[in-house]
Amino acid sequence: MNTSIKARRSIRKYQPDKSVTKDQLRQLLEAAMLSPSACNSRPWEFIAITNRTTMDEIVKAHPYAQMCETAAAVIVVVAIPQEGRPMGYFPQDCAAATQNILLEAVSMGLGTCWCGVYPIEERIASIRTLLNIKEPKIPFNVIAIGLPDETPAQRGFFDEAKVTYLD
Image (cartoon, rainbow, N blue to C red; front, top):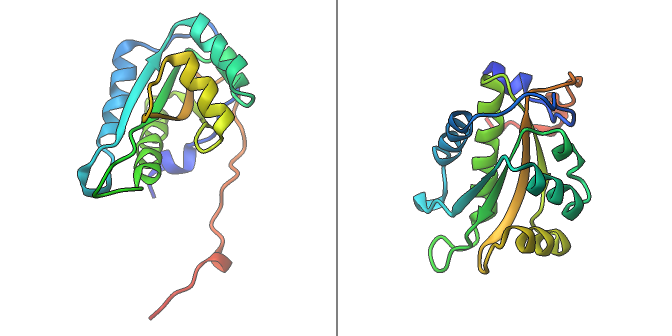
């Protein structure tokens, strides 16, 4: 199994004196854009943030994004709902892009924490206003990024009871 999958954790404390470079952000965003999407629709845009004031405003706007206080960067995944074909698949597509960011970060020695925005209307409204995201685009999530200052235990595990094999 890919070691990044087993090593991935939600990091909520970062080393505040360590930065994330523009090249590192670009590498994470490239990984995101290599993810699959329905009919290759790529219904996403990304906002890469290293501005401390903006990250502090995200902490105020999102009740579960306190880890952005010590994060060196934030990526906001912005969903673009599709009209026609393939309608309705943007949540799966943006989640796949997000997972690619999380796994690429592990391979780079960085930590991340995925903070959901969509589908909670209050969070959508607050992040939309803060970052000036125009409808029909939807702020999908906030991803805190930085050099980890903690090592949480693994929480996920394989559960055979959740599997049905059809031979």
